Length: 270
Image 1 (tube, rainbow, N blue to C red):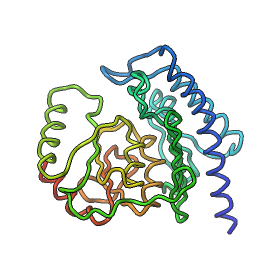
Image 2 (spheres, one colour):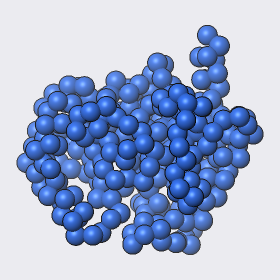
Image 3 (cartoon, rainbow, N blue to C red):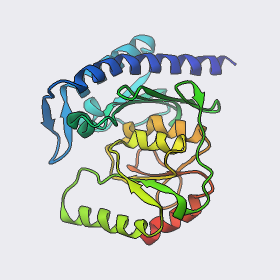
Image 4 (tube, rainbow, N blue to C red):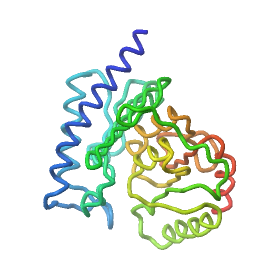
């Protein structure tokens, strides 16, 4: 019982941190952005950095012995190795390009792994005021209401989300667009909303039926959403059909009924 109490406390701390960062994002969303380039099209803003500092300071005050992995600090210094220790994995602003353009699909993603297993997840979109939460074994919620994945059984009736990624070399772009061409014949339609974490939450609440992405930034993109999705009755796996590995930068997600057909379609699209 004590463990459940502590997981609830971890979730509460993460929600507090996300809401504080959300105020910063909401304010910055309507102001002029100061943008830096991490790559040709990969952007980072002052808001990303400010939010990461704010979230980590809040969580470190609550849990000084825990480990921390964040997109801006860790990406700059090389990825920290994920250990069995309780580890907070944070994307302070998922959807930076959306943020820069004033497109309202932006969020804070906070995940806690214990023994390398995603255990607590918070994904908060402060522009649309949507707070997704999940604790392993205790269900998933949107603004406090229970959510669950869709019950679709056919790919052709399913809405698929993916992302084009940030690499613009010809081989990567060709592979990405060829795969989309192949999948478009098998699903109802495709969406690219620009946030890996919100795509996972979209599958969790049944707005989307399928999602895959390869080559995303790191575990901070998926640590929060993976818990929420699984607690909503969804499944997270490698696009090859193998088990999901949070450190691998490859993810596929769906309801359990679509998994086999989706994996087959992904393999055929390679």
